[in-house]
Image 1 (cartoon, rainbow, N blue to C red):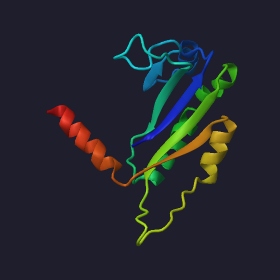
Image 2: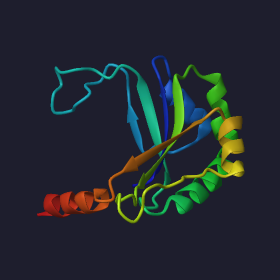
Image 3: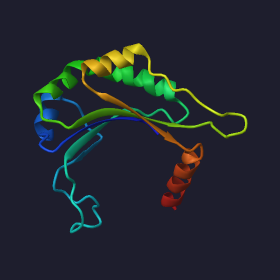
Amino acid sequence: MSCILTIAGVNFDIDEFLYLSGLVPNKVRRKGEPRFRTKPDGPKIEQSFVTFLVSEAGFMELTEQISDAITFLEKNQEALSRLKLFEINHAFLDFGTSTKIDNTTVLYETFTFPVPLLKLAGNLELELHLSVYSDQMEAVLESRRHTSKN
């Protein structure tokens, strides 16, 4: 997994934001597009959103994801400050990690976000999300990648 920045809004003008910020998106989806590309007549996306890849560090590398996020926010602080000019509903950094809890030798884990990250995110009005996956998630994803190549 990686750390992803997601910005979304019912009336969010993605194209204007990308033009003003100069940021290169990972994914862009617009309100009204089909939720599933394989079902064009199915449910529609209810708000436009754009994502940016902040870190490619894996599930077990949360510290590296955090370090990459601090670097990303410092580097793009001016561009991201333009978000305040737009009507958005959500803006968040999503950190993906896996748990080591096995209910035998490891009973709990603590995840900590350092003050520099909290300050940068707070100044930019970004939420922090922590998505915790099973410790088997990377193996499942790798298996799917291997299967899709064949």
